[in-house]
Image (cartoon, rainbow, N blue to C red; front, side, top):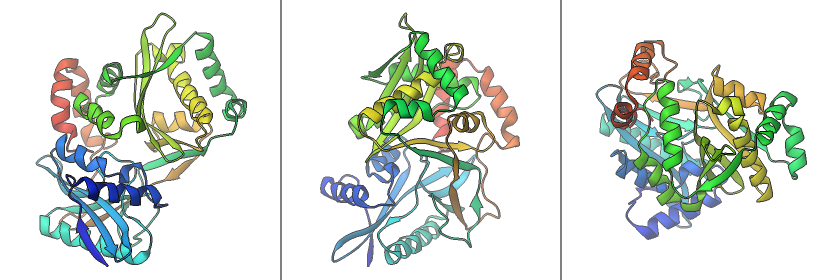
Length: 344
């Protein structure tokens, strides 16, 4: 068993990586090689996409990014901006080889910690973060069954959106989405990712990255979402809402339309993505009848004593959040990408 580093500019090597990821049961959308290009070109992070192979071919992959920040420290992570990460392998030998090389690499790079965003506990001896959960649910075989599977109160909100004459369409670009998204995160006091990032997602992943927008009967954009498609799953990942969206039930209608269309396409799983425990998005997904499943973000601490808490739930960032909300939106949109690239 040998461990190698992927050259993201090698088209044939990228194709072999993606073919393995598509067939590996434990791989996710975030194990696709396209993320290497995005992390390298958009965020300017050094990437270390490791793969273990033997005479039969690739046996496992571990995508890693080296994040260096004066504000938040130095880390090696699988994977920034991803809900899921860590090793995707066909056997324990390949997994062990990849983790061993990742630990060696972390020491060589002088980072403070190695982070693996696993969906299952892999290293009980490592400290783990219990901040995030994921919400996944099978898609029912018919539109009627999917509607009836939504709890009554939430179903009433979906019907309200339908009654309000809302219209959902797939957008050819990210412009409308970004305006809604940037305004939305600004109201919550967090930096926005760049429009360039969302354009890169569309360019790299093509039809597997879809922009879906809900508009009022008069054509006003109200709510939008960027979704990823992977195998037989749909994963709504980034979203933004106009202030008027709640009154018109545009957010509820948006996810219903996404679910309804996924059913029509024959998809099997609706992945509502990760949320922080105890937040509004967590409660919203629970109200849709989804049950949380803990995510196991595991850390190999090297030069630090505790797991980093670089997220809005950390009380020490409350003043920063309050200040960010008061920034003019154009200033926040210009400054945000310089900060958020270190937070993923």
